Length: 266
Length: 359
Ligand SMILES: Nc1ncnc2c1ncn2[C@@H]1O[C@H](COP(=O)(O)OP(=O)(O)OP(=O)(O)O)[C@@H](O)[C@H]1O
Ligand SMILES: [Mg+2]
Image 1 (cartoon, helix red, strand yellow):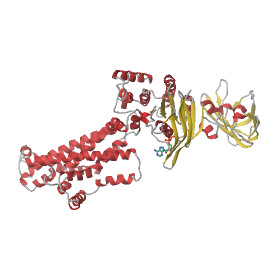
Image 2: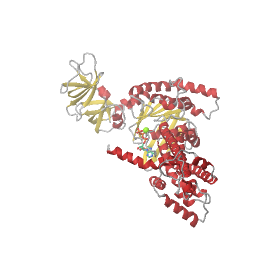
Image 3: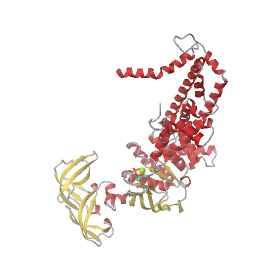
Image 4: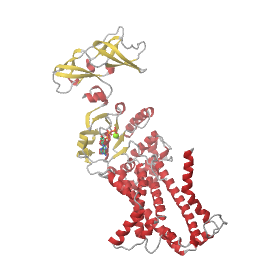
């Protein structure tokens, strides 16, 4: 009984701020405070008319898409190498690859900034953010794809080889379709992580801010707070939808290749 | 029969581990050949060497007089039925079976006919449209068979294809596999650790121990004249008695503990047997309990019943014979009017020197 009370308290603590987002996004007042004064979609309309915001969103989408693709390709290579072959020092290398998962983002951000600007003398832009986001998303991709490959019978690809396919066509015709749910799930998760990542983007952004950085900039103007609430509402909804789809695909993948569910973040 | 597969001095190392030690064997075209041995003895490794999934560290693999050294699995005239069956779960049954025809020049209709024919052969008529992941174990196994046989390989390699099935299904599929092999005339190489399965199905059997072939023979020779104690122990059950070889020549003179003196023909002893300490083996069904009024046609010895195991059709007795260190197991048919003896009963047993193997 006590345990249930704790659990409920924990859930309230966790989700109350998120529930407040849509509440104020639809509230007809510039000041964020109770009591609520009335229903409006005004803040959402305002969103659609803000060109600077549109540019930031577009930036973020490009970055998130590139991150999703690159992180998933890297994850595929790593997971396949991990599933198929045993090589000396495999454990150590896998551990090393997964390290960014627990490394504070601020450290990644600062060290990348120092390397890119001070050491290499490069200018910042979208690609620097992509680079850093790939760095933090790849471990997630590897974890998801490791699950997909782990559930795969290694005899599958051999059977295709045995039936006359080449290494590449065996991979394309058998392995790829079987791990496809994992690939989609990995891309969705990397996309979501990249889309709302702030610290790294803040440090490494060039002249064009990403959406989270732009939102942070808006916070200086109290009158734009309800607009931010509206934007936040959309983002939360989008994240939930994407992560749900990702999880559905991950589970379907595990089921389809006949394994038992062992991994996943959700 | 012509020789189809020749392995000469094949060795395989996994790192430091010596998985295959000097394998020499010849498999004839159209033969049902089995690789039998305990777990970890290298059966799968040997099969994968023939299929081309593993390279050899030493020695050569020839198929149809062609050296397979640089021939990858997709170009060898072999197909494999994997232990897990490796049915592609994202395809239908028909797509699975047709998988190997992807690169063939057949027309669509010809392919469909070939698939239907292959499915019919394994008794899966009309299952083509089913999703492969929804099949039972026995059905998967048939799909795997059809998928491999549709390519008409020279050799079909089967890695413990029946081990995932229950006993009844397994016995049914044994008969079916033999029938199939006779029908298609393709050479089958079967890996199994079930000695009964190997005896039932094979033309010849290679018994493997720790990366070596212990003996290679037809099932009857293997059972009746095992060349070593470990082969005898692995196939069926055998009683071992200490003995002394007293003379060698036309026949071998023996003095067997508890049984006394006898002569056996030379082919029941290893080549080059010398006088001295030895052991003899004798199968449980070649010994017999003598009931009231029965006499032995050859030799007999007094015995005490030590244990009785009743199997319905058979009764297995463990009996003690004076001067024999271990109890002897005797298998008796439960014929009409024949009693089942009780533990402690005094009896006589009959033995026959023709059933003796000297080690
Ligand atoms: N890829 C590998 N790397 C290292 N060792 C291996 C490899 N494959 C097999 N072995 C080892 O080689 C030995 C023989 O293996 P193999 O799979 O051929 O045995 P098996 O006779 O088929 O056994 P089972 O009846 O259990 O299937 C085993 O000790 C195994 O651990
Ligand atoms: Mg094996």
